[in-house]
Image 1: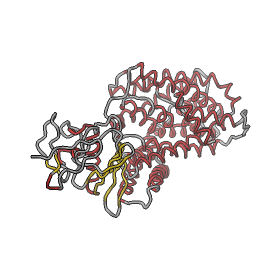
Image 2: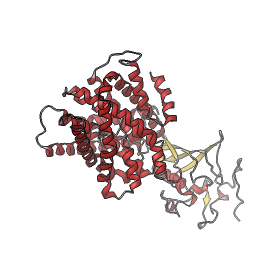
Image 3: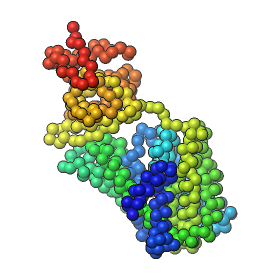
Image 4: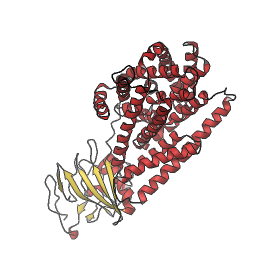
Length: 528
């Protein structure tokens, strides 16, 4: 099953469809009415495994979320995840009651279930579509935040007995979100501090520790009667932006676990459904989904983003990009476990709605972005920096990859102006490695090994990223990194430098003279 699912990823990447549809199809194919004819109807087990998988998916999404993109979008995402969810639930529930004929409890459950955008679907689609960072950040943060209030609403609507005071329910939602947020932030910062100051004996332990910390955040939030989903997402976001040792390996490990979680969860949901029962609820699902997509979601975006003065083009794209996925289907198992009347019909309607409208929205999202003339910004590519701690030497070995678009291309090693205690020790170019000279010119595709002592490790990475974004004049152009406070590297003398002139840093002849030139490097004449 895993091999088939991995092969399906290739198909989904070429077709533009979210992979969840293929995984659901695999589950349906081997289940009842399929070639496997496997009878599976354990909704409680599906819910437990779905929750566990969702924790892993949210952790993977948080680790891959860039704080600089999400930070400006946090207020808008928070309003979308609270006020927007309320608007969506009300409009969708009204449509389910008046147009489809469901009673109010069933209508409210469906309205709450489908108001959650799916983190796995959003992460998988948006990271392949070149959108403005504000749009991507808002949608990713919304998909990570809105699971928490939606779960609370679905559980409340599925509980036996009437809901007497709506304001009490709102107070409970606010309290659970506050507890989850506080625990997530605390666990994230404590975990990041521990991983940065306690060197583990093997690099393979860091990814395991990161995922364990994320799971601890969920468990602590749930035990404290808070939102565990919000806690795990916030903790993972903090860990992902904390510049931990072996950060690329951490993200790669989390991505692999995320794929396994998605595959297992979607296949299990496909097994749970009975295909011949879907026919009776097909048109009901289409009607509810149409109101959700055309009325509820645009109204939700309009009301929520009104104070932020976001252009209508971006609002239109956010309205269409509210992708549903496995999360609504998992939430639809809650009334089944609670034995709510008509819960099987609720599950079938949600299943059909997710499949039909994901088929429509996923492939058309790139086309809509192009039609609205929304594309990614042309900022310089960021550097890929990986850190490995050198415990006994109290230092760090930074592996720096210079991608296409980085403005570090054409910069000489001496012009990096790394702080005292840091030095470029090796350059790998065209599968050949050499020790660079101060006049060595860096190029796209180079990989650098930079050794930095513990006190200047952060300043070294800031300076490297600043040069990657602003080039040799990073300090002059206002790019971060603290370049103006950093002196030249040891063994160089600095003359006053003006924008537009060639760098005046030259190797000091008193420190050993000009090193032997390397292949493809320029050599400066000795200073007179």
